[in-house]
Image (tube, rainbow, N blue to C red):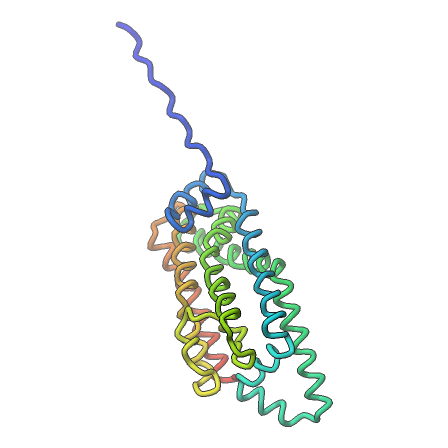
Length: 252
């Protein structure tokens, strides 16, 4: 009897960074499976986020100006206006200057904030998916998943750039809601309850897209059911939205 040979199964080649970025929009399961199999580098989506965020930073600086952004932010909050009215002229000027530097600095520090937020979200999700749903995810895999899943949020920034250069009046620019991707963009923050406005702003198309992708990726790298990924991700999002809306409703 002759021996019957079996050809070894060839391992699937890892995707390139560009392929994983493209697949995030067209075939996300391929990207997340690639991450699960050990290809966990995430420098390209991080670079894309930095580049687009700084283009947006420059556009706001040129088209609006950060002093105007700070003024708009204060005027769109009735309680903030009340507090400002109680200050002297010098105190108001100092308060607006501090607000301007704080807002401008936070946007300028976006690369660091991206890493901090990604680390916090990945850490929370690591505990949630592994201990509550029996997953086997690792922190590096979840961090990589978060980076790629966040790519659709760049669409909101690109839409914001279009709005900026389409002739928007500087006095109407709202840094907290600069693109028409959610219900809050069609409401006036001065005319509706702050909690309702925060809730309407949270129902954002690009955010929902990101949440769906993150849910898929979490389930994939953790080796659990997709429903577990959706429950974990959307559950935390729901808690954060409710707390944020409640805080805004109480404190403005």
